[in-house]
Length: 181
Image (cartoon, rainbow, N blue to C red):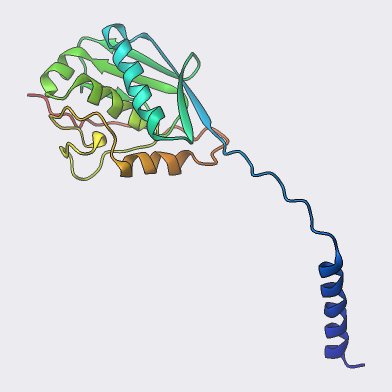
């Protein structure tokens, strides 16, 4: 028997066995992994309820990551003065710091809720877009009151955290996008 006929016969036997075998039980669909990021707003002073509102906005928009009040994750602190209305210590991280500065929030012209949603956007993986000041995007800063992330921003967060098991390495973040008056 030639080599090619032998291979054809072997493949034919495998095909018959595969077709005759009972169907394998199908596995139940795996539940999507949801990453939890804890935040502590006990030092957020008068912005504590605004922090909770911002968390609700992000949690309503994405399913791959959830922000939950607790310790051991993101610590939020409010102070009088700083370099910008708010700063986040990392981008796409589960542990870090967010600072909010009262005087800079007031002089920025942005709503305090927008500033808080923006800083959580950094924690959730977002950087500043090229079109700074675009009120349709919370990550663009600007003298705006819109605190709702755009569909593109929500999709980017969803993609970043989907299937992520281990905490990503923190990336340094510097810069302000809310112009002071």
